[in-house]
Length: 636
Image 1 (tube, rainbow, N blue to C red):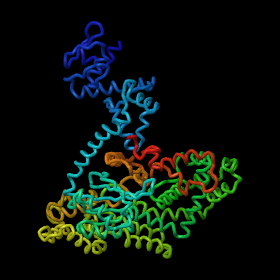
Image 2: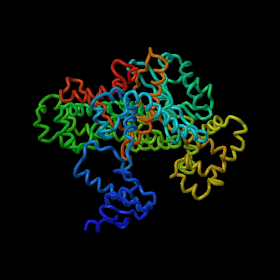
Image 3: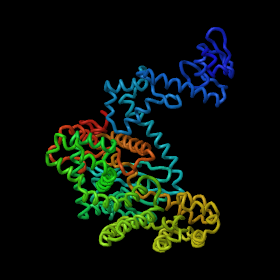
Image 4: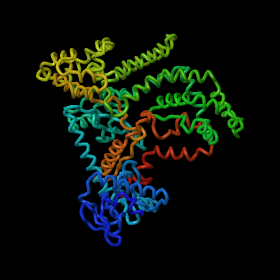
């Protein structure tokens, strides 16, 4: 009998008819063993109340049985209009999910009036579900999400007293070519959007721009701010001087990722490297502008994308070149294949040039060499990009990168010096920071490594200057010399077995937090110095590289609503930025269909017009966030 095979019969007593009595709460249920399972699983369903006395282990087993059965049933007979459920069978808040989707992606609220939106909502929440209306999205849902974001940020702010924080200034433009500065605040617990300022009226006046920065510093708290990172150090040179003069304990730093991309940009200007990139682009433009070639390439490469898009043009170029080298054998096979030579376009000039590049051994030799010399810098960029603290490691990363470049040209001194001079020049002029020097000195993996003696000697003076800056009074610096001595000689907790064993495995900031109690003053400096990020690209450039237009001739309420929309949008983006562990942090998910690697300068193939149109539309921020006749994503 089926009843005897079902394991759940041991949890109940069979009564007359189709009734059962629960052994844990004595409740009598109509509907047999099926109703009992829902009762014991504690997942309310079909009007069954959860059992209040069932042990957790029994409930977990029964819940897994119910879920497994429903999944098999759904696979065999897919249902339409099934309300969303989580893997634990708890109902998902569909209204919230829809609202977050609108805000995170800057969608026009009027889309909630469409028939397709109503069908989508019914499919997600069921026929009786009432989806958020445009009015609810721009009022109650906006306030709800704003309050929740503020609450999460308040939790993050609690750590600033010990770790400090970094203000990040990201400059972008809207569709009216006005300059905006998006201010983010980053600390070990995360990065959040603080505010956005229209800097157009002040952009040519360094004093007025410095006042914008000053207002952000005051709102965050000068005592909490360790450094300010700007995405364009040269453009903010005078502003940085004014801010540093007013707030001498705050460091003004360049974006490490931007500086590294500038190094790669200079690499691409080396004649043979630039020529190699141009030839590679000749091949990829042909492939990406002809459907048959694109399908053939995907077949030979196993569906892997050839062209890569990153936050900077130079980074995209070297990532794409590396991608081609990785798939060199397959691309050669494609060019020599019968399918390629017999294609309708195989006889035209562009097809011939593409095949000529892919079959040219000299090209592939240059591509391999260019990829190898850029690889060390791309590795550094992966480590310092994003919101993880990296100040303590950037010196070590750059030292290893230069050694790797030397290794590429052991027998070719002239070539080696060309690339190393580029790196050194950018390092001295743009990337180097006293904060990075102090962080290197405080990094236990460097301080206790005999091979780092020369490096530590070169940064010692800057380390002391940073200590003076962060501990400006004699009272704060009291006993600091003896504390530095304890650290260098591994005395007190610095010398315990755990501290010694984790010098190179724990993050520098965590190491100081755990083992720095023997030197409390120096521990405070180390915690603040080692807890900072190095780059301004805390969000993908695709997320924050454009800015929606602000209302100009509307009332104060409109402007406040606009600011709230930005606040919720950017912070939802920051919270959802997590990538798969095996993904490349430098590669953007969306391919730039307008790049030199893809866009055809000659009359395009009609098969590609739709892809190009979709991309161009997606790059226009106002077409996503607002309607064609409105400056806000809703009608007021």
